[in-house]
Image (cartoon, rainbow, N blue to C red; front, side):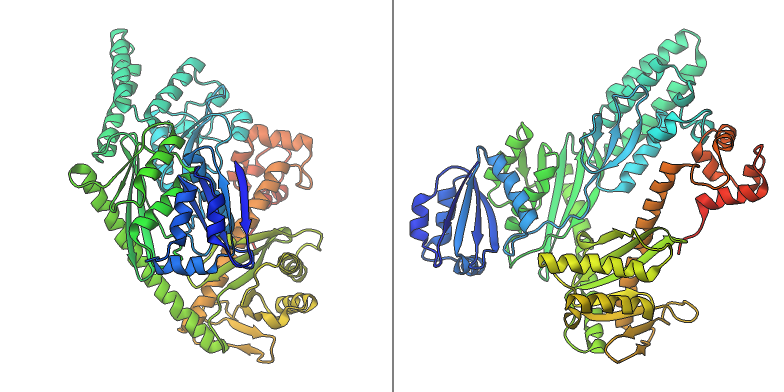
Length: 613
């Protein structure tokens, strides 16, 4: 790559265009304050940039953009695919106001097979795919993955347990008892047989069900000829299940790999529904709502969406759309270069592909109507909250909550809501350290100091309304932090305390501006919004606390329990066959272990099962 910045107080387009190369690359447009207005890609940078500075521009958005340009920076790339990837990365990093933004808080889930292990496991996976092994997907939802994993357990019986559990078992678990695993952890299956089961699993996940069934039929006939009727019956059951699954999964009528994308736009909202088909199997449908800078044509939104969508995903052989894609030829060439094979962008007109487009379009229609209804309700709630507080509807609401178990593994959560509802990419958790166990006031003070101290240092965005899940003590901690940082006058502060009976609708709202405590009507849309934000903060705090506590306890195992030394730990693990079985045991069962009385059994049980605050 090579960067060529061109800057001017009043932008001289003619002089700038004389210096621009005709190579492929990415361009960034800046305003007078140095903020990125727009990021774009081009097969020919000179030709593309020249189109912005013609005498007559039809699009209002383009005229508004060009009027604000103070400088342009171009980055040349070796290939068109590299330009596509760089554009996506820059859009995600800077979120320019004139770009279509793909707001995707979650990565797609995959199925992972640890093929390098002696006894490979099959597992749910989300995130980077750096670990060695085989990955299958992506699936459109976690539900699709778990349904497939459940099916694999029934047919092939390959282990799905964590490696830490697998390495420490001394007797088979429940999965073996219900015929969902062959217990390789305790040597109940021959390694050659297990490896064959793994290869069958890989063949199924790779979409080679027909060839797999043929192999299993041959094995069944061979077993029957050798009078091994038990093995023949097992293979017969596998074949039966595989044929049933194959009939269900190949109803798409679309062979190979394809993504079906349907776009609908209404009320300034765009919905793109994506159906994923891999190896002829329908893996599910998911809706996306990209952020739009101005009124755009569906073809433009689709092109911008696809550039970002495929930047970190596998590119299928075909992408089916309900609208023609802007610059389809250039986009197809860039995707083909990235995939290493031909990629076709098609608008289906007939046949099964058209049928699947109709289904995807219907999913988009349902999702869009749901979003528009939700958006209307959110705006109604914000307006009611503004009327009650006095002033304009808050553009950003933050809420903090604290969660711990008797002072252990304290976690603070911060959730963010905007005009569109939850902004999950802005959520944050804070692991609280260095305070007295169970001191909620100190925990709240630390979390708020870290959040707003960083905002002060780095110029981060402040909320218009700060909600604190707690009583007057927690609210005073928040007030102290805001006053110490000199931002108390910039943020409206409200505490949300539970009512006398801790029932929804009886919350006491605590102010620091002299209004004292207030109670809203239980049917008020403003209260419903506050409850929604508070409940989300509580949920986010608890899940963070559970993860932190679980990690700490899995690391320490039994070592942190008072009265349980090395000899008792050994007796417990020997009796239950591992830590997981011990966690599932009741007090009476634990008390039957030699050297463990009922009082100590209750203490051990509480160590794994005590409640949350």
